[in-house]
Length: 344
Image (cartoon, one colour):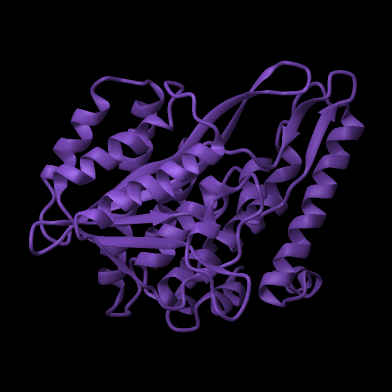
């Protein structure tokens, strides 16, 4: 049983549950992103990746996050805690925003002429305090040393919120490349991952967003450095020029993420910004425990690419599980051996 883990996750109310956190089918990428583990196996002859724990698309990361939020809502829904209904409503709303961003990203990748029209309609329909989550970041192509064209991508998230006065607030969520354009902590090498500007007219906001959507397609010829200038100089300056104001956040500083996990990290940062601290921590712990337990039980049955030999497959799974246990112990300062011995 999971009672000891449940008590550890949330002493306030989850301890009242008497059944286990639901286990899920799990893949190496899902495990790798949740625990920020980088393991890659390559074809030695062709120097190509056969399998990797990194490199999720936003669509994959968003679908996984949506499912985990749904699981968590089911898990806490019948608790007697009076805060639960308020928490589940907030979580459901954020889950729907992530779903909309995922669907919008698919439209961007299709390079549909309807994309900008759909975006403008969605923003026009926002009531005061309502917001819209929009996929951001960039997609570039460049020539590698062997003259092959390769894609270089980075995911950020944008959020647009309607203010009481009818103007818009624009938030930029960035956990990796380009984060040095955000406010730096005076105490250490961490950065405020959310950059926020308010009092932007809708017409100017659409002008900015249309420019930011373009760099997520293959319809541009900009380099990464040029795109960073577009986002953090051109677009922000356009907002400031018409009187937008920057909002300074307190206690939202983080270290820049490791490469390969921007889709998952940006979604977590979005949730962290909107959820009360204890709710975010409980959700994060729930996901960690669910993925950890599912990995222990189901990873051995996970099918890996046929290019790997049986020995290589077993070696990969062993290396991944060892890394998971190390990260799990580091995050929760708890002995995996002690937990296993207690059968939870």
